[in-house]
Length: 168
Image 1 (cartoon, rainbow, N blue to C red):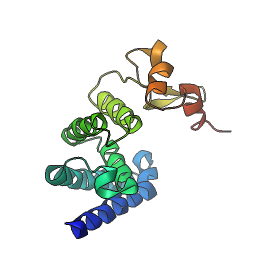
Image 2: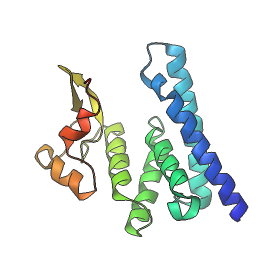
Image 3: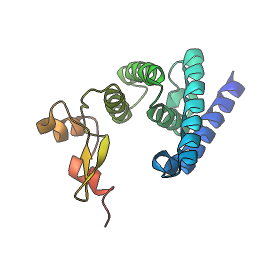
């Protein structure tokens, strides 16, 4: 079992490494690069679905911090697989409630899933685009409370967050 878990951790971190290297293709002007990105994230989403079926949410206690973060990243990028995102969200919520995962990652995944479902996000973590040089979030359920809600889960204030995306 320990060997299987070690192999699983390696697999998750390897998938996330490829994801990070190729994520620039998500919004590429080249349709072939966009298609390659979609195929990669779909393959990873499918595999994460199998992992969740067998192990539940891959928590840090199970697979280590790096692999747990990798699983979260894979779920985040499964944008065209709402069933996978919804299952990951449910399992991650249970892990957070049990103290086995962090509320910050849950907030990002919840926002991402809500936006992908056509809903309003909670913490303003998902950026819709750039207007007049400033990142603009997808609509938020309670825009006046975004910074308060972000603070509750350990996310920096919205203005600090979007400053990372702005050209210097």
